[in-house]
Amino acid sequence: MRTPLLLATILSLTCSAAVWGAPLPQNTPDKSLGVATCASSLCHGAVEPWKDSHVLQTEYFTWSRMDKHARAYSVLTNTRSQEIARKLGLKEPAHRSALCLDCHAHNVPQQRRGEHFVLSDGITCEGCHGPAEGWIKSHVEQGATHADNLARGMYPISDDVERARLCLSCHFGNRQKFVTHKMMAAGHPRFRIRGPVDEVGHEQAAEEHDFRDKEHPHPQRGRFELLVHAVEVMLEIRIVSVSSSGVHDFTSQRAPPGSGCSCRRAPSRSALRRS
Image 1 (cartoon, one colour):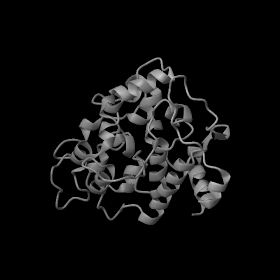
Image 2: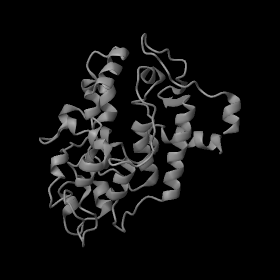
Image 3: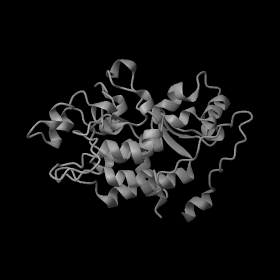
Image 4: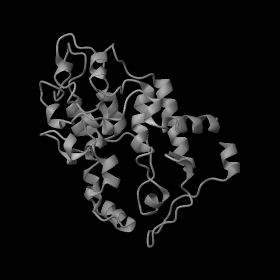
């Protein structure tokens, strides 16, 4: 394994958004209209794929039934999450704290929430595809193209690098949000981007959710898989992240009192060389 190359990949992906073309969905100025605007059976809420459509039209059904992103908010109300919040000394419970909501929901400011926006819906359509205010009407017009949608604010999730950058923003962290050693010591699970597919497995949902439009096909598997693999290696090493002041070592952060920290220590230099 070429560890330096993989580390460089992660660091480049977590750098400032100024390097990239599109702001992440949480940071765009447009309003997020809410899942209800996508859920109609005449929109993306069909139970069976449409024969002559550029997309499956079952995306909402798949998300709500199979995708763990739909339950990202609800886990913040369980006992484990509340205990993590207590150990971290948060002023509010997990389901009300921005520290948690920024990754467990599409947590945009109040003024950028439409009439049908519901925070408890979790990581919604707009959490990945971008706030729909600018393209909700035009994207169904006859002759509309994917390029038109992107120009109106849709996030370019069909681009493998941009897609990886979006996934990494929560499943690893960026300048705005990062799961630190302290948070893991308080009980936050270690990250795992890929894993066995179960009855509500995200991988299966992703496969079912994929567009079949020739204009914006599935990202190149090889390149995207490399990016994801790089993330997994970094999560195993778990020693660096990029923030506004550069690369920092999070392994020195002390666990909160009574946390019962069981986090793995950072690997030795010899272990890194062996990888």
